[in-house]
Amino acid sequence: TNDIAPSRGVMIDFFLCLLLWGTRHGETTKLQWSSVDFDRGLIRFEESTTKTETATTIPMTPWVREILLKRREANRRWRPHDESPWVFPSKFPGKRLNDPRLLLDELNAHAGVRIKAHDLRRTLATEFGKHIRMEQIARLTVVGVALNHAKGSAVTADYMQERAEALR
Image: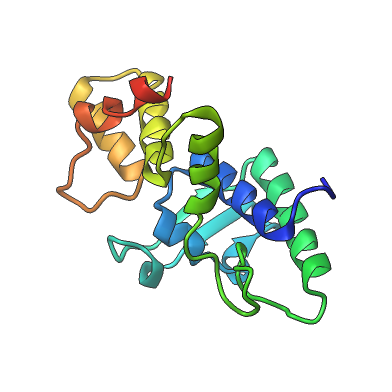
């Protein structure tokens, strides 16, 4: 809405996408518009931006498409003379969002809920793992691939459930 400060709107959209994608916060802050393909409905995280140094492409769901289209327009209204390449720009012109914890700190102060960006990744992994019907080892492997874990770096059941119960 128009009542939200532009930098707060960036953080809100950032956390929504983080939860929907299951990406790492550091990778997501580096996302550039050139990696968002609205025509094909794909978002590509380049190998130079990922922890595993492996490029990954994720599908753009209708809700994410809506969020990103509105984010692009909001970015343009916020800084009409600054064509920033960053999907999630900083409050400092030309910079990308670096530390989105302010919003989470405010959530904790007002609601007493302490979460970190990585907790959203664990939540997605937990929910994703619940809905895959296959053997436990295969399920964890699929979740690991979906979250772009390094090869040989398996997702464990503990990883997926560690914070999920606290978040509930």
